Structures are given as structure tokens and as C-alpha cells.
Figure 1 (cartoon, rainbow, N blue to C red):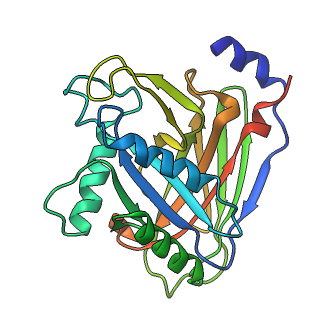
Figure 2: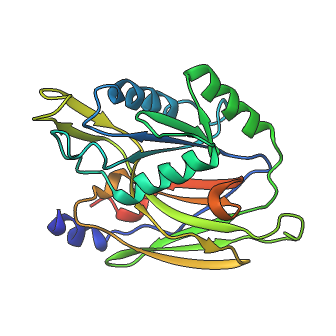
Length: 248
């Protein structure tokens, strides 16, 4: 993989530029694990959601693999204690007594069942976005440079935080042990990187190193803008960056 990254660097494409619309992009977060037998149906449902045309549902879908199943027979290679902490934080925001897998949140609100999830997505898509975002993504030999511009008056919004994320598609694992032993699990929109929350300024920059185990042609980047503590989701942007990785 490292060799392929080096060979692709000379073919990096033109910078990618995207802008948010005047309505909110809904953010759907799935908390899942390869060690959980109830999770594969939720993973498959998320994959179908990703394939829904944007003019029907405007969604940023993110699969966060938690680590609390790692000690029960199978270690999920995509899991992170950081993602478990995020799920606990969202659970506390929702006054949950416990967290579980699979668990869905839409714009930070727990949603159980496909109908509830779709309703919350549609409600978010109908809301006017409180701010505008413009994202430019470029790259050098080893990393991605994200430049985020948020023009206009934000005095009515209050303090705003934002995060940068990398997700990867078309991932597959042959599970050898645990509740899904013998199964081949396929994943979409798996979160591979999440930055710390940062104050949103009019002009912002962030650099992300390209990890050698990422498939460059399946990588996308996202920006998530919320109030402090992820209590209010304000807007999101996302794009594939395959064109920056080149086509030798």
C-alpha cells in the first residue's frame, strides 16, 4: 500500500471545492462493532442509506466502530476508544442510562428504527442552515490540506465548534472469532480519523496525514459543525477525495 501511495502522488488532481446548501445536511452516526451479532443488519442498512440519491435525502453517514466488544472474542480493527467516548457523550446528551450497539443518532439525537431515522433526516433537510460553509481540499505527497471558509454574520448562532473526519468505503473483514465468527462483513463510511473539536473561524485550515492502510480511492473527508458539546448540529459537508489520489 505504501508503494502505491508513492506512485500515485505524481498524479494528484486539482483541488476539490464544495459548498453547503441553504438547508441542513443531516448527520447519521451508527455506533457498531464487528464483534456484535446484531450489528451487520445495521451496517447493511447504512450502506443502503449512503446509496440514496442526494436529492431524496441529504445525509452525511458515519460508522463509528467502538472498542467495548474487542474483549469478547474478536478485536475490531476499525475500533477506537475515542469513538466509544463519543458514543457515551452523545448518550449522556440524550439522558440515556446506557449505550449499546447498534445505535443510531441523527444530528446528535438517538433514533431507533428505520422510520424514526428517516423522519429525523427529512426534518433536518427541511431546516434552513444557520451558516454557510465552503471547503477546499488539496494534497501533497503525504497528506490532505483542508481549507474551510465560513463567511457571513454568525452572531445569532453563538460559539461554534467544528471537526474534520476521514471515512473509508468498500471495506471487508473475514471474522474468525466471536459472535460473527465465519462471517464476511462489509462496511461503508467507516470513520478512520476524527480531529479534536476546534472553534470555527471565518477561515480555518487543517492537515490530515494519509495513513498507509487507507485505500486512497475509497477515502472521503467531512466537516461537522456543532455547538460546543455536540448538543446542536448546525451543518456538515463531505466529499470523496479519490480524484486527488490520481489515476495512473
